[in-house]
Every structure is written in C-alpha cells, then in structure tokens.
Length: 120
Image (cartoon, rainbow, N blue to C red; front, side, top):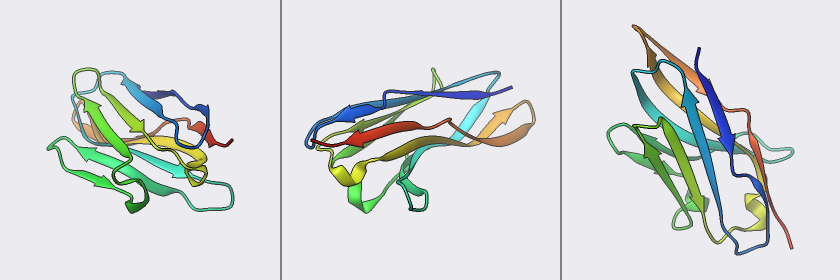
C-alpha cells in the first residue's frame, strides 16, 4: 500500500515564501513523475509543476520563475519551493505521483491536499 503525505501549507503574506513537501511511503521500486496541482475555489484543478525521473520539468506559466520543483528519488519525496507568492496562488495544493511501480504494476496516486493562502 502506497500513501502520499503532504506538509508545508499555511498562510503567508504576498511576496512571501513557502515550501511544500510530499513523501510517498510503501514498497516503491520507481516513480515516473512527481508533481503538484492546485485547485482554487470555483476553479478546475490545474498543473503547477511536474518533474520526471529523467529530469524533465513542466511549469504552469503563471509560476515560472517563482516556483521550483525538486524531487528526491532516495526519499521518494517531492518539494515545491514557492517564492514571491501572490494572492492568486491561493488554492489547495495536491501532489500527484504518476507511474509508481510497485512490484510489476504501476499506479498513480494523489496526496490529500494542503491549503495555501496568500493574503495580507
């Protein structure tokens, strides 16, 4: 059984920084992609950033230059460093692990979500 546990959300003033982390536990052989999505009230869930095992990254245009995704393959953990936060970054942030190999099978997993609120 694989579980994802997120941490690091909270409230911050505009211009501030936060670091989110998401760790996977279980008998994992490999993970193809680790990433972050977010969902603001009344809006659809959208991609924030992803990073593949080969090092390919993808960022939402709205966060380029402000957010950085880092993955630790030894710890099966992904981090999202968020700088210069804006009120429009307010959302519930979900980590998403794609292509998690457990034995001979592959699965996708979502984290439980963590609230990020940017407000003065």
